[in-house]
Image (cartoon, rainbow, N blue to C red):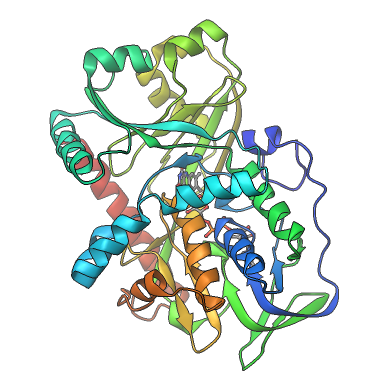
Length: 430
Ligand SMILES: Cc1cc2nc3c(=O)[nH]c(=O)nc-3n(C[C@H](O)[C@H](O)[C@H](O)COP(=O)(O)OP(=O)(O)OC[C@H]3O[C@@H](n4cnc5c(N)ncnc54)[C@H](O)[C@@H]3O)c2cc1C
């Protein structure tokens, strides 16, 4: 168990992490990064690989935020990709296709380059609960198979699904072997080690409390400061620092997870013999998989208020038992939650303020692929290597709540997101 992380199966199973010191005194770097999640860590790797000096400041510990607590489902594409493609026409469609698995490819490359053991497993199975969802999934399958024939697609009906996931709660499913799942906290720590091995300075327990823009940006923490040519904001919804460009452009949604005790081998082989990650096709989805030590990890929504629930399992366990009644009586050993950024305009918020303050956030539930990709995209843009995809995001018009700098407007925005989630929950049932 790693101290300092929120209680989760990931913190329980991550192994040793010596940690990094807190920032103290004055430092200088080409690039200062705020936030040690996928965005910040991936950018740090790209930048040090490009020969830049990097200082990364993390308020808690590397992977403390959504990146170290998520479902670990490595899902192609990103939320808002249709909007981005439509806005930029042929160029946008081409870019979306190029980005579809680019985050996965990057993760795989870094796993190899930095010898990161993070339980990467192929196979992501989307499952449909209603005839309407099944028809939509089949349509999607035909589109994908035509456009990307070599990505390991397989559509299955209820009979085959029964053998693949030990039950007939769902009507059919689409398997993609190019997607998969991994241990997200192990990936975070591995990326941090990789970046540090190439010279990045990482400081934990170093919340940034001030930013002074300028030709050189000055970033302050309680005990130190960093002067840098560029600053990257990679603090997701936890970001509390005033950057006008981003005010009122996103809200936060919460997602929750729980882990069962380890199951016996025969039961595991019945429930998930191939070890796929599974996610239902609902907009407000449940996602689940088995872990490397034989547990079921199950996640999803628990309420619409955004308030922290008293018991995660009280909400999630009944849904798990509907899918796998074989688990009746199973013990839940861990439960946890986290917050993810939801841009009002859906498209991830990736761009630049002035000449040298850059940002990347708001990947909704697709941050494994997109967070890693966005960090790389930002790193490449900052290093002056490639700005093609970055520019498409940066030039996207933003949707924002009026008076977003006022806390009451932010509260209203949060309620609007809760209402939208409730609307999709109702729609999913039709
Ligand atoms: C429960 C849950 C399940 C999810 N499941 C999936 C999934 O299965 N697949 C998927 O693709 N996506 C999933 N997501 C979404 C995904 O985890 C996120 O989109 C992604 O991790 C966001 O990465 P990030 O780098 O932007 O932010 P984060 O990982 O949140 O990192 C931001 C970091 O910034 C730090 N920070 C904040 N303020 C400061 C400051 N002032 N100074 C210094 N540091 C600061 C924080 O401590 C934090 O560590 C899930 C999210 C949650 C919460």
